[in-house]
Length: 243
Image 1 (spheres, rainbow, N blue to C red):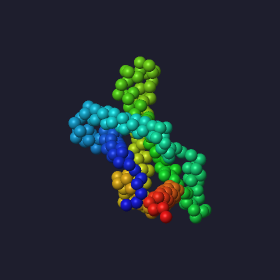
Image 2 (image 1 turned 90 degrees about the vertical axis):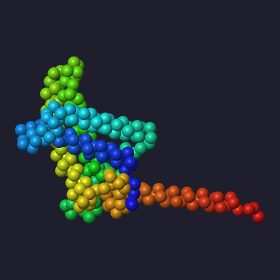
Image 3 (image 1 turned 135 degrees about the vertical axis):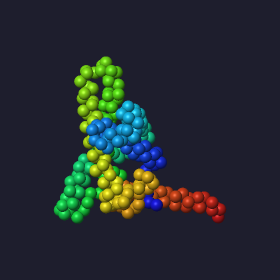
Image 4 (image 1 turned 180 degrees about the vertical axis):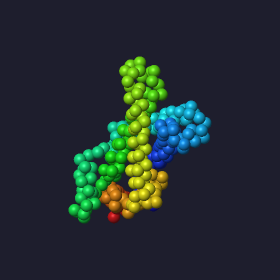
C-alpha cells in the first residue's frame, strides 16, 4: 500500500475544494464571457443569470469557509500542536530548482533531493492560496459593496471587479495547465496521482520524489524497532527468576 501521506481530513478537504472550484469556474466564467454561446446555454440550463449569481455567491461562501479553516488549522497545528511548517518556502527550494534545471539540461546527473514537498508543489500551493484569498476578499466587496464603501473609498468596487475577474482567469489557467498536468498527465503519475484520494503513496514514488522524507521515516522506524527490542529484552530479564 505504501506510506500514509494524507489524512482523511485532507482527503475530504480536497474533495470539497474540487467541487467548489468547479462550480465557481462554471458559474464565474459563464458570467465573464456571457456573450459566448456555451455561456448562454449554461446560464439557461442553470435557471437564468440571477440563479447563476446566487449559486456562484453561496459556493464562494463555502470556499471562503474552507480556505479560512485551512489557514486556521495550519496556524494552530504549527503553533500549538508541533506540526512542521513543511509548506514554507526556504532557501533550499531555490537551490533545488537550480539543481533540477541543471539536471534537465544534462549538466549534472543528480536531481534535487526533496523532503515532504518539493519546490514546485510549494510554489503552486502559495500561488493558489494567495489567489484564493484575493478572490474571497474581492468577491465579498462585490457582494456587499455598500457595506465596504462605508469605510473604504468607492474606487474599491471597480478595483475588486477587475481583480476578481482577472484573478479568476489566472487561477483557472494555473489549475488547468499546471496542477492538472502534475496530477494527471505527468509521466511520474499518469494516468492519475491517486495519493490525495487514497491517502497513500508508493515507496517507489517516495524514493524518487521525496527521498529525504523517506530517509527520515526509515530512521524513525529503525529507532522504534530498537526501542521495542530493548523493552522486550528488559521485560524478559525482569521475568527471569533470581538464581
